[in-house]
Length: 343
Ligand SMILES: Cc1cc2nc3c(=O)[nH]c(=O)nc-3n(C[C@H](O)[C@H](O)[C@H](O)COP(=O)(O)O)c2cc1C
Image (cartoon, rainbow, N blue to C red; front, side, top):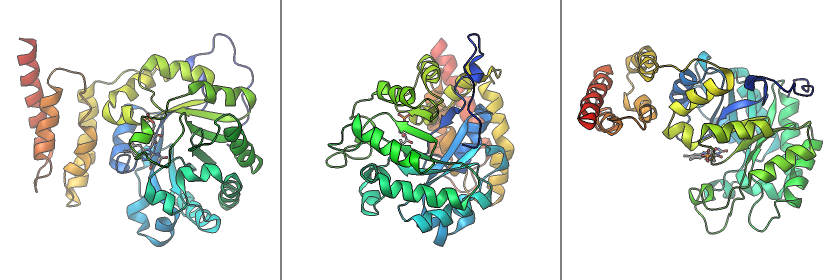
């Protein structure tokens, strides 16, 4: 990070000054696309948002505008890259900086077979020298921060010694920010989905890393759900990153924003209304409602009628010509179902 180290925290520090990396929304393939990030930004003005992983090869050879375009409101927004070829990663990072991203993050946590065959993602936990080389190449190519997202280890690795070895090697190359998904990945025998649930979480290991290296910026990820647990994490490390909860229960982002930064809680209806101009501009390009609306299905999660809202939207938003009226109808269905629920 190009930030100076904070001094000791005064005892009565407001929460917003704790955790200088703050609240982050995880990179999630197929989920955290630009529409999703636009929506999350409305719920949390301060959260750091991460793109889905994009491979360095795709950035260098693919349709850059489609892969990397984003809305100015998404700042601060980080581009996550996947790859293990230093020169290609450096070029991709340069392109990302040119697009205006605030940070480049290297994926050293994804366990899918496709990713392993390309020799990147979590299997790189075994190759700290190569990660250090990739990091250095990217860092030399850009002036924005370059960060790493990793696991506690993979397969037979020892999360004590091997995580320290990994971090020390990459840190020696200059990396000062590590997002740690607080569980191992088992590359043999578990699917990517199972690898997000089955290996046990170990937050204490992440806190220990921060204690050993207080100058390092450490962001905790994995299984964070309740506001209290997030605040407890922020008291120990510099940031917390939410993945699935942010997606399935996006209003939790507003609650966390409120708890951490004191931002007033928005009404869900107002957040929805704020999506309207965005959705209408999207529809005007000829694209379908569904591509945006699929990300807002969880907005009313936990409230009476939420299921009716979700059902109406998912059943109708894909139809050609579906417009904002479908969203309005979904709200009406929810209100009717909610009244029924209350009766
Ligand atoms: C659908 C999905 C896609 C994901 N894609 C990525 C990805 O592209 N890059 C990455 O580093 N992690 C990816 N992850 C992992 C998340 O970033 C996060 O580390 C993980 O879900 C644990 O956090 P959570 O328990 O808060 O969800 C993905 C997770 C999900 C559920």
